[in-house]
Image (cartoon, rainbow, N blue to C red):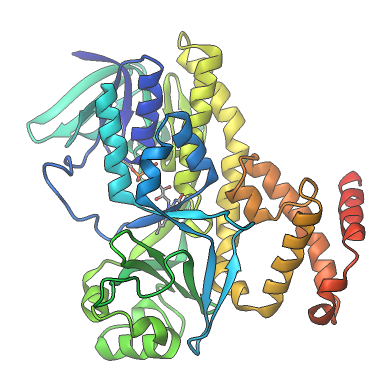
Length: 450
Ligand SMILES: Cc1cc2nc3c(=O)[nH]c(=O)nc-3n(C[C@H](O)[C@H](O)[C@H](O)COP(=O)(O)OP(=O)(O)OC[C@H]3O[C@@H](n4cnc5c(N)ncnc54)[C@H](O)[C@@H]3O)c2cc1C
């Protein structure tokens, strides 16, 4: 039977980036994926997110492997949220300081760039190999292939095989494995705003567009071909506006004309796309331990989160960077030691970002349209400008820093309590510019000490 040094299950974004890190460590790496090689057999992603927001943690990892400059040309900066109200009016809320941006990037192109870099470094890719079982006693992996079943043995196995991980399924059959999954009430569907007849972007390309409507929302991210990929988030059923109640062109037109009319005017293929594209579910997965002997889960396989903080991929890239740092420190003589240290260090942070992602859904679909929210953001931005080390808005801690997610979560909760008190002033809309900012910082520091 073939024996590999390190086997990675999953050639998605996280599996390929981890393969690059390991190859740069001088290790032999083989990657297996159930899907075909897209370059040889192009296939439809089946409604999976076409583009994503790449932010600081992701860029940091890309810089570590020398890929930042190769990725920049395929990424579009988005400096803030462009909020569309129900009457077609828009307002802009910056994400951070001037020039701080998150970047829209196409999943397919990005994955391909990483795979090509992996190949260039000598990673051994094997497509159309579906992992169906892992025997931890013998470190033996069983694959289903077109030619039938095949087995390999690996010194170390990294499961980067996504939210429905096969490695995790095998771990679930072991004793004392904790596992929790939750589908939220909302699903999503991808739609398109194409380039205009003149071949230009139909809206501002340097913003993430949001149509917040309380219990549901539409968002749009720009693509290099000057189109936008829109994602419609609706409850599956049970509310006035939900997927279950949109059954024909008339239902669809009525929802879009009522709630998203400005977007509707820019979507000539809406009706075809809506009924052709799948409605996908959103899942949160938490489990522990991630390690079984010399096998480990990474990325979505260990912590799939809902997409509302734009951190799933960024967090997975940070996983790769942290694991690589531990290999630097501890060497490769004991994979079980490296993996053990990794899971202990990382788990509190991934729990925190899973929780933050859930909480941010309310902010995106509802709070951003509240004028008080905008004032709150302005006060926080001012605090950050005056006291850059003492007050960092939660969004910035998560998106523009590499502070541990758990620390960001705790600090964010503290700041939220202080801000709730500030915002309770009935005259805050008029007075926000005249606040005693030093006193706010003092209150925050003293409540920290309590
Ligand atoms: C709507 C939506 C929007 C999102 N937006 C953002 C965003 O803006 N920013 C962000 O950071 N994140 C975002 N995410 C999250 C991001 O997509 C994921 O966190 C990221 O793709 C995880 O990468 P992964 O490599 O761990 O898993 P995946 O991308 O799922 O890759 C897993 C790979 O494993 C393979 N595989 C699966 N099972 C097997 C098997 N049995 N055998 C062999 N191979 C297998 C699959 O074919 C696949 O190639 C979004 C997610 C969604 C759903």
